[in-house]
Structure formats: C-alpha cells, structure tokens
Amino acid sequence: MLRAFTLILLFCSSAFATATTWSETEFHLQQGKLNQPFASTPGTDLDTTIVTFQHASGWEYGGNFLFFDYARTDTGDELYAEWYPFFSSSALFDVKYDGAISDIGMVLGVNAAPDADVLKYLPGVQINWNAPGFAFFNTLFTAYIDDSKGLASGGAPAEENSYMVDAAWRYPAQTGRQRWSVEGHAEYISGRDSEIPGVTVKDWVLGQVQLRWDVGHALFNKKDTVFVGIEYQYWNNKLGTDEDESVAQLLAVWRL
Image (cartoon, rainbow, N blue to C red):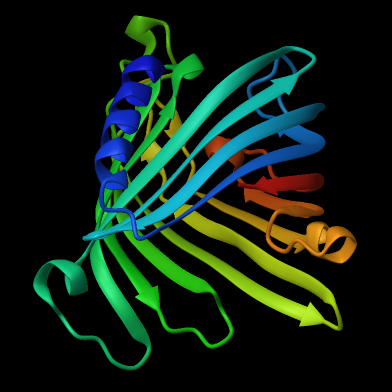
C-alpha cells in the first residue's frame, strides 16, 4: 500500500511543482521515550528514534503539505505518511477575504500506515487565518474515512468513519540575535467502532509542539537552515486506547 501511495504522491507533487510559487523541505530527527499502546505489554515506554521528511509548498491554485515518518525502536520499525493538498477558493474563484480570514478552501487528505495496513481519507475544509505575529495559522475540519482492509488482510482492525478537527501554526520570534519559533499542531479525532464486536476506538486529542532555536543563524549567520530544540507531545487516548502520553523529545531540523 505504501508503494502505491508513494507513487501517487510523487506523481501529484511533480504536477504541482510545475506551478510552485514557494516551497519548504525539511528533514527532522527526534529522540525520546514514546508510549507503545500495542506492545506485548501495553503502555510500555520505549526509546524511539524518528526520522521525518516534511514538505510544504504553494502552487497556482492552492498548497501542498506532506510528511513521511520512519520510527525505530528496539522491537522494530514502522513507516507512516500524511498528505494534504489544498485547493484555494481565492485562487480558483477569485474570492476576496478581509479581516480575520485570509483564505478558505478544500483539502483532500490521505493518511497511510503500511505496517498496520491502515489507509484513511480526509476530505474537508481548510481555513487560513490572519493571526498577528504568526507565519501561518490554519484550521482543518475533515471527515476521517477508513479504507483499511482490516483483520482479513492481516492488518489492524477496520473502523467506522469519524471526523477530525486540526489546527496548525508557526510563531517566529527573536531575542537579540537569537531566532526562535514555536510551531506544531493539535488535533481531535472522534471515537468510532472497530470491526471487533464490542470494541470502540476512543476519541483522542493529540498535540505536538516544537520549540526551535535557529542554531545555523546563531553560529554561522545562515538563517533558516539548521534548528535544534524539543518537541513536546501530549496524546490523550493514544491511537484510541486507554493510554495517555506526555513526553518531550530532542529535535534537530535541517531545512533545504
């Protein structure tokens, strides 16, 4: 499934690239002890290394955001990917926005976890806000549609459909010569029934907030290239289980 998803992603990204107006590509390295709700002993905290490829760009009719995570622990590794193409109403239909809202459009998200054979579609609406001081502040309201094959294919149990609400932001700051940013996202995904009789996937709240220091600017006078910091992750009912998580991870970022 990941191979097909990757091919589709590369094809569509190439199509968007023909009209790209801006782009930002990053590699992240994170290290911390993360809760493993589906381990042989549920709730075990394991040393986890995560390598992330992340890309955001603008094109003639909207925007594009995607990432691939590779996570490794002592017990194994896994891949996870999300992609959110955005279609702008102001670009497509010349809609003018004033005040708090800068744009509204359609988003067609895809989430894929190939090791668990999980595939989700997230069609919905994205609102971009004129938030003072923020580089961006966006909110998403989407369906959370399950297209997983379930237990019959050896994957995670299939689930009923639900919905997601998400907010994403970046807030840059500077103290003297030191450049910082606080960025991340917070999501709520509603509960839903599993294909296993009597089993319910609980609704969850996930917040991931990064505090970044622009070390490239501080040490080499090259801004927006290398960052270090921490990512704090709070996850209530992690992956729909009874497990809660509150953990800080070391973070390093290289921006191309």
